[in-house]
Length: 184
Image: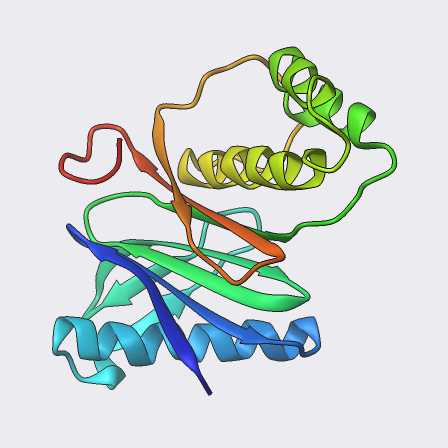
């Protein structure tokens, strides 16, 4: 399994696996990768690291019983995960593609300002900009412990960082603003 460390700073780690596979297999592989990389990163025995997942609640990484923030995202071709030792975290990945009903999607989930910004772009630039806006919003929602939901106008108190992936994919990492030393 080829695991790529995408970001590592100030108690935050983001990893990814680039591989096309069924979603169920991708979920298993990225969870195993989180344990493996976290064990090396923290110099811990892998058996002291476990994942806790409860429907309707964000997943957590347990490090010798101590919880850490954890987030996952999948798209056909990439699975990503983020760990935050000092708080919540959100990560999202998306394939850049033309979405025929982009205007309705943006209006419903990203709000009027982003919809207007997307409308002002040339058609060729819109798919990338939409993917960036979508992954930023979804990562911030995950960081805030909220599910994907329609636009409510509430600003989320997160720093959102672009994570470099191969062409054709966009990923964003979100951490709470109170965290110092990471992000803008």
